Length: 238
Image (cartoon, rainbow, N blue to C red; front, side):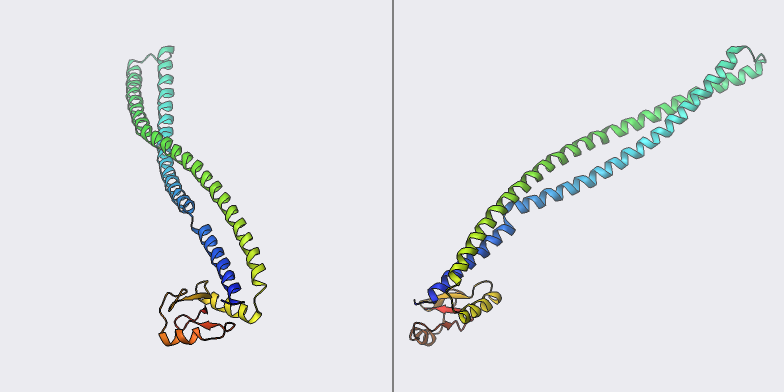
């Protein structure tokens, strides 16, 4: 293998390494884990909203009952005070007032039972909401951990990419401009690989077998003349 083709393969090696690093940056496992955690957090957040909505509905109904209970208690107290004051002497009026006090007491007891039922209905919702909040807090901690890992890994990978790019630039400076341009054109449309070795009768770029006559033709080319794979079009270094 003669210059500048050994240099070209070195450039290709650096480009492949850079591509691999960028792929690694985009696809390392913590990214998928973070996506799963964020999806779980979104599900739990929706569940929390649902639970809070139910609790708020029950709380609203409890508030209405509490107002009704307080109104009944006030009304009963007023009637009882009038009965005790001696200001009402007519027996029929007293009987009517006593009946109203009795009805108010029954109504208040019924309202209090309804309020208790609402409280009992709310209790498991409060427990579920607390458990949901605990899970969300744990997931938030895990998300922060994953973000730190991702940031650290990205920094490490970017440092490697920077080093590879610097080494690549130093090597690529030795390529003739026409060969470099051809290589870049091929690399851009052939998945990042613009040059490959011819090993036996196989192109290492596409891993296909070249016809024997083509292989013989390439073998007899001058050392400084490059060939291209008739299967994939990549520059073949022989």
